[in-house]
Amino acid sequence: MPGIRRQARMIALQTLYEYDTASHNPTEVLQRHTEERHLHPKVGEYASELVLGVCDHLAEIDAHIQSAAREWPLQQMARIDKNILRLAIYEILFNNTVPAKAAINEAVELAKTFGSDTSSRFINGVLGTIFNRAQQPIPKAESEVK
Image (cartoon, rainbow, N blue to C red; front, side, top):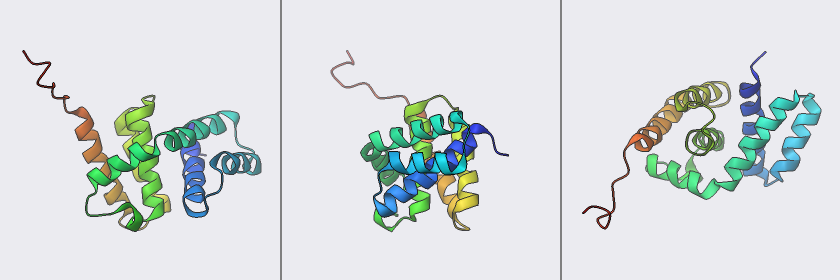
């Protein structure tokens, strides 16, 4: 049986995918998944944190995806890949309770399970770019340099 966080990521991914494809309310979708599967409360809690976090930061997360995967417009990207990226970027840039490398590894595993044959390489490449950019020091504005 997968661990609590892995289960939570799977449920969050399925919730975000349904939200992305059918525009169903993500909170209601998540509640339905949690009740139907009789999930441990901690799985539901973390899945909820992920889903709400992604939804709260969606525009910013999508901007990171577009910046790191310029040759793949969001509208042309496989929905499952896009939502795996959204989850991982939320964990890497906003959540900070999981080491970035663990979030990337988990995203690659989700891609192997739910995506196409090329999804895991694509996800790894995009997340690697975003992670490397996040590690760069922020240049000081000219007004700060004196």
